[in-house]
Image (cartoon, rainbow, N blue to C red; front, side, top):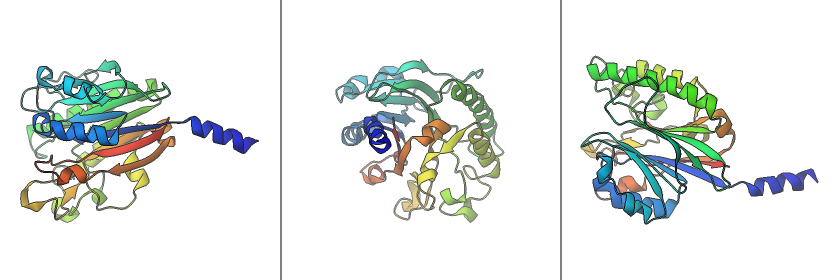
Length: 275
């Protein structure tokens, strides 16, 4: 009797699929994004570096695929967007107590097939350029504000997923050549401590939860045949709240878009949940 009841409950659960993809210009990658949506049918796809103002974003073309979209953009640089099967609710476009002209943060509630809401937070973390630069000071301040924002978000939304381009490798497993990259931007101890401090608020690296082995990356430099040599970094992350991690069923990196003509230097990272 108990077994039948458990099976019935499980069958009522639907898959909730989210993905993150730094497209490095929506103008260039629009057709690739639409093709990926049609093929993979995620509940939510988070984009970074759309590199356009909202007025230029292809809302209608995305709508034609059956998806709604919200975007926060600026000319030439940065910019984030969330594409979703069901319309985004309770949209936020600013970190708590942090004034920022750069468009790097957007969050919304996205409903699963059964109506249950997941707080989807999409970020494009500053690159930082170099540890002794003003841009790195900005990265640290921005990240501190993100941690504060996520502390509040997690207290209000047990089902939260934070995803995007973090411009930080969590560990040496996420770098093709840890010796060459040691102490450099993306792989420094300072940045990794920043990330681990964020995780301590109650977030979990979903890809690593399912894939303990290394040598799997989400970014490869255009220069020097980086992709063919698998000379990459894993800097695009899906971080789940504890409650959402309990419902996670899979996480993967889809390398297929990196093989296209005129690809982004990043490729999608996907996570699925039973909701």
